[in-house]
Image (cartoon, rainbow, N blue to C red; front, side):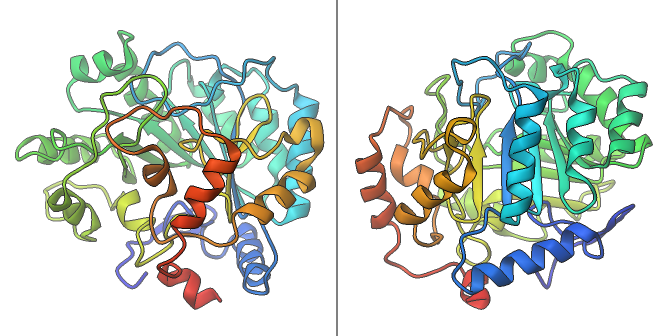
Length: 359
C-alpha cells in the first residue's frame, strides 16, 4: 500500500495486521504462501482460532460462533497449529470468548514459533504485568484490545460488565510496556464517527500510547439485531487513508476493515486465504458466515480445506457476509447448498486488486 503508515516493531516493520511484519521470519513465510496461492494452491494464509466460548462480558456485537462442545485441550490446539504450519499459515490470531481465560494461553502462543505471526483479540480482562510479560516472551506479536468508547460508562454499557473500560486501558498499557504491537479496536458507527466524538476517541487512544486504532465493519451477529449497514458517505470516510491522522495526538496508524478488505485492496478473503475455527473445531469462511465446512478436530485440516476449495474458488471484491446475511437482520441458519449459491453469485465482478496482482 503506497500510503501505508509503517510501524517499527521488535519483529520488523508492521504495515498492516493482515500480514506479518516485514523482515520477520513469518513475513518470508507469508510471501512464500502468496506465491503458492498464485500458482493455484489453496493456502490458509491467516487463521483465527477461538480457544474458548467462555467470556465474562455480554457484548452486543460479539462475533463468536458458539461450539456447544468442551473447549479444545492444549494437545488438540497443538496438533491444529502443526497442521496449519504444514499448510503454510503465516498469521494466527487467538480469539474467543476471552482467550485470556485459558490458563495455557502463554504455552499455546509459544507453539507458534517465530515463523508464524501471532495476534490476540481480547477485552483485556484479567491481564496483569506478569502474564503480559510472559505472552510477549512467548512471541506474541500483536494485541487488539476492544475499546468501544473514550467514555468509561459508554464502553461498560456496551460490554454489559462494569469495569471493562479500566481493564482494557490497563491491558493496552501492559502490552505496550512489554513490546507487543498494541491496538485499540472498535466497531465503526455513525455515532463513533460523529463530529466531536471521533476526535475525542482518537485523541484518547493517542494519550494512552496505543500504536494503532482498528475500526471494524458493523456486521450482523447472533446476539442481537441492532446492527445497521453504514451509509455510503460513512463508508467513503472509512476508505480514506488519511482518516483521523490530522487529529492532534493521533496514534501512528488508523486502519479500517472497510478499506483493507475493499475491492481496491484485499477484498473478501473468507474461505480462500482466511479461515475461522470456533472452539469446537468447526471451520467457517469467517466468523460472520455461520456455515461450517467441516471440523478440524474430527476430520483434520486437509479434508476441510478440500471442502472449502471445492466450494469457494476465489476471493470476492465484496464482503460475503453482508451479501449472505443482509441488513439489518440477524444471520439465520443457512444451509451449505444455499451458502455456496450465494457465494458463487458474488464472484461475477472479478478479483480484488491485490489478488489480480498476485495472480
